[in-house]
Image (cartoon, rainbow, N blue to C red; front, side, top):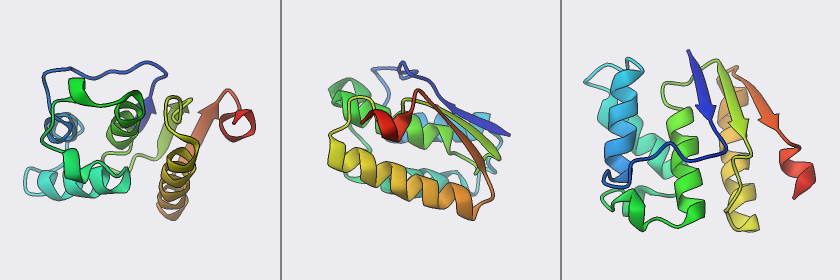
Length: 122
């Protein structure tokens, strides 16, 4: 399986953060009994658990990017393409989210590809 976090949002304004993660978890083949746990894990990793029931149209640009990153990591894919995943995030949160997710990626033996000099550009 492969994850992708494109530069532009792939979100629907009418869906909540939780609904997005549950939808994509189902599409990725996460077993139905594990979908809620996967959604909780991913939303907590990107610090969106407290706003999980808010429609994504109310999210800031940085929050939308974090949700897109959470979606890309559903199911612990072996390859993840992240195209400027911190665009729109404040610098402190961007570094935190990247650090947490990179730690998870390396722990899970995942190969991650960052485009456009993610950290050097900042």
